[in-house]
Image (cartoon, rainbow, N blue to C red; front, top):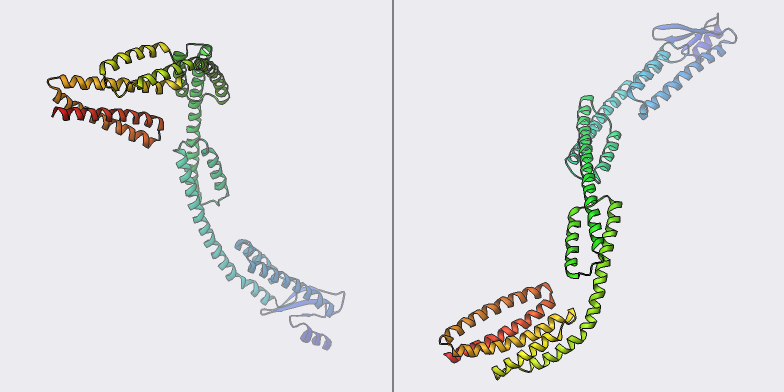
Length: 416
């Protein structure tokens, strides 16, 4: 008994081994048996049941670490603590089971803090999720009222994917937002289908119109009635543009037919005009010579002689025939300038013989000045627009008007 007592006091403060091999653990409530060990010495028995305690302590330590790290959800941690505490309290082991249970109990405030933190985190995430879902709903509803048929469908798919990634809210709020989101998607899809159905119908109508226009253009391709046919092609082109697009593959094919017919006609017309221009080049040379003679009549000193000579030149001018298109305007302007100069001198002489010549001269000055102002305005506009060709013509016209004005003023001065 003395050796047993020495063993209990020095080596096993938390338990003892009775003479019959029963092992007891000491608790504040007294001893309780935890098992028996009859196969070995009391020291071996105590070592066996002490190892069981060490295993429990290892489990407690591991659970403490897992709880402290936050790897366990509060509910899971609470459940694990409860189960392990029951093992500790009823353990068939020798050791400070009360302290071990107290360590488990000490985890309760930690779990409570974690639960509160998680609740706050969930509330924050829920608020963020709600705000994000409200944004998604608002954008979906804007798209539902838009006509962005090209990008809207893709964007709605992106919004749906984003929605699925967001945390759920409370059921009532989440369902309400989802109904709005789903309704917006349905509305957009319905409008989009209606739009493309209408567009398909319009494109089919355009196809019918353009097939007719292509046939009409092809029927005109071999015409040699250049002026009227060119006008018809302009009308057909206006109809083509007004018809709108046909289905893409059909539209391209019909355009090739329509444009090919145009190219055939205008190519033939340009070739014919080029041939005429070559033929008319000699006529232009004749008219150049006539202009030299006509311009030599200025300044007019003998109005009757000038008028007679100009009539002869005008007859020769008409007899000379057509000139290349790019020469018509220039040659006609020079001939008209001579004619206007002769007419101005004739008008001046007539005004001098008129009883009311002074009044008419004043009236002419007013009209010429008004005409000069109008021409000057046109010239300024053409210059501002960068239309150098038109500006050059207006400069010539303005010079003629100013010359006439100068003569009118001289006549008025003589009348005075």
